Length: 214
Ligand SMILES: C[S@@+](CC[C@H](N)C(=O)[O-])C[C@H]1O[C@@H](n2cnc3c(N)ncnc32)[C@H](O)[C@@H]1O
Image (cartoon, rainbow, N blue to C red; front, side):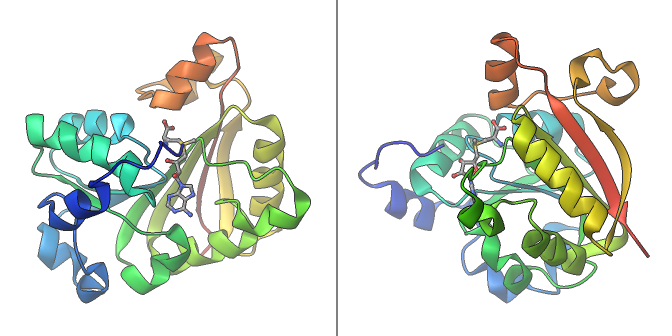
């Protein structure tokens, strides 16, 4: 998702109380900063539909939404201005820097929803489920930490399963190529904006859940 450049978006994000500025300053102290609650993050949150729903359903969890484009994040910030949620914050960063922002054992759950597929082989390392990223996630999650990934892109899903299985850091807990018809995995499912869009076109939704291999 990359909306047209929106004049003033950079400034609005830099001045928003909902976007955490200078996030590296909180490395190792996120729980003190946000309150002593488990921290769940979505990487590539887009406009934040998924996190607004989760944060409303689970006030006992601190949620952080990560999005690299100010033009996209601005939509989430505008929504927060209308309906503020105390347990939801945003970070405008590239996920490649995630280990500079979070220390080991700081994050309890990572959500990846409809991540950019980067279909060309030469761009495989940019996929948010590539081994490069899986190693980064392993560094910031708690021992019981968990990763949940949804997509409608079959090639990206197959790639992600292969990367997960080849990785020494992860145990695959569950996976499906038709989430909405898998009663067990779909229980309590919160739909993302892209999930609504693609499932309404008839695309099956794939999901995997993995935990750290300790
Ligand atoms: C296809 S959209 C999906 C949005 C939302 N998760 C959903 O399911 O509706 C993917 C989003 O991830 C963001 N994104 C992609 N790569 C990223 C990265 N390396 N760091 C931060 N955000 C990223 C994009 O800018 C885009 O807004």
